[in-house]
Length: 395
Image (cartoon, rainbow, N blue to C red; front, side, top):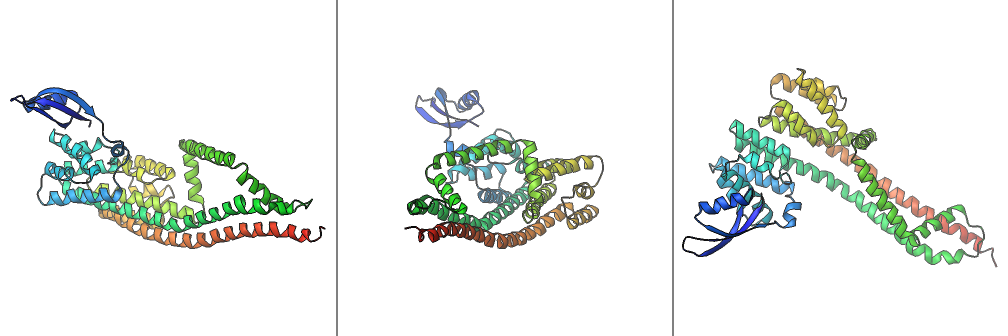
């Protein structure tokens, strides 16, 4: 909600000032009148840009959810718990939860208040909180939500951490090649001016060096334009579906992408069901956590079949994107009535599988990157050595 800076007079005529949060200027006027203050000036006060554009990290948000759960389990009322968070030194947290606390104090439920800040609270988080409020187990819902967000952050951290070394290799290789093509080759190129017919590989290396020096701005501009065009085209559903389908078919990468999507979906769905969210609503919300449009379409189709009375396991099994062991676990979970726990167990199992796939992929990628860099350097060396054999024949 917007914030308003006001100047007002108290009953003794003393001038006072401060900041109030309200839906609009009229609500701020009503608040001042309720305090027996006579408004002199009310000006909307925009929040710092960084607060609006930069949200909370997943790990920090998980800590906040667990803090709320601990306070609620200790008997602290919801509004008081929110005010505690609003009083923290972290400006981002205090700003966000000051808004949430104001909305709750005006009669809104916690889930409704959180939904007004979609830049901080995702729809899945809001759905879990609303289910907890309606079912009367808000403290348990907040605790599960905190654990869920923390687990998702850990998975994201593992994926990111595993890519650091390959990216460092790529960066170092790129720097080496830039130095070779933009600095070293232009300096030694005049040595070969006396040779009338250079080998094809040497001509190719010199052409790349020319691009890296004389036409560098145009090359960079072309690369940037292609990147922007790719991002713009990728936003189209058809293109995104094609890319996601191609990623699933890539050897080595496909199983990893599918496992990550299944783990995210299973953990999200299990957490929402455990917090009392109805199956169809949970499916509709949790499918967005998969991060793959092909799997999202399969889950959406499964939701339609479940609405027609079919079980979850068989509906998801028709897509072919879920492994046989996952479908079997879902079948047993539905029959035993503990589907939420089975989904969480599936997520745990698949995440262990992800770690193994990541390790295997990194072990494969590292030598391939080193071999690729070595091959390029070898070609450059050959391109420079071959003409030297001709220089000895030239007087």
